[in-house]
Length: 260
Image (cartoon, rainbow, N blue to C red; front, top):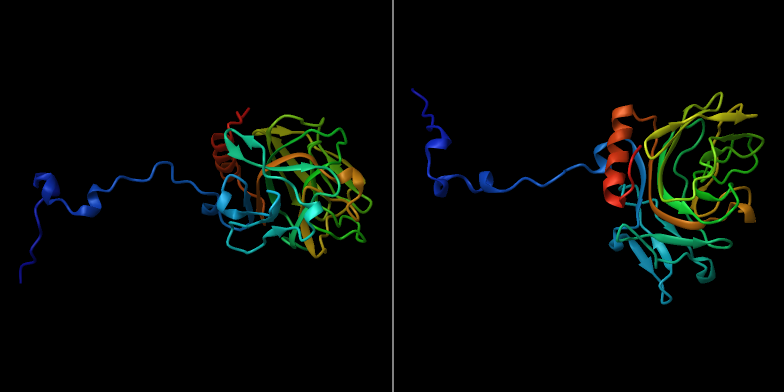
């Protein structure tokens, strides 16, 4: 039996075209979740993910990755504010000790995470921490602090850092390529920075929580952030250059920060 095939759609009047063909495509279309192995996504521009207390301070910052690793603070006096903006979008503001948000551990063991942070520090201590992926203070290499040096401070007898402190709004990309020897990499606004290492022999994350706005063993005063955090993205693996650049371009357009 001969199968019926309709004629070309271009010969039909527009009123006859299927409704699905008339729908405009969404502009852009990229989301950080398009890249596999996302572990955490905190987005201050999305007000629906930020729960405020009666004083307009941040009680909870919800994770958009789908993993439920929300960051919160049960003590009212220790909560950051939600009053500042960057490129017309809200950000979370930290004014030093004792302000910090914490959530469930993101990565563990000999991990190779890639971390993106959009933020600015106004303090003077280069150790001030945007995000710390591990609360382990007993193991060498047991901390993973992203600081505005910019750098990874692998606490417990080892430190890795890169370049001079950055005090303007920036996109920080930091990660670990080989945890067994502590190899790390760093980009600021898409520009690769040389990484110098001091005493780094391994990275071994075995804590119970991550923190935003503070890090270091026991939340030492020098690790509390004075500044803002606009967005944090964590992936559990080393991203390809193409993947990293897509995320950086997304963050650049969103927060109005030019890439190098």
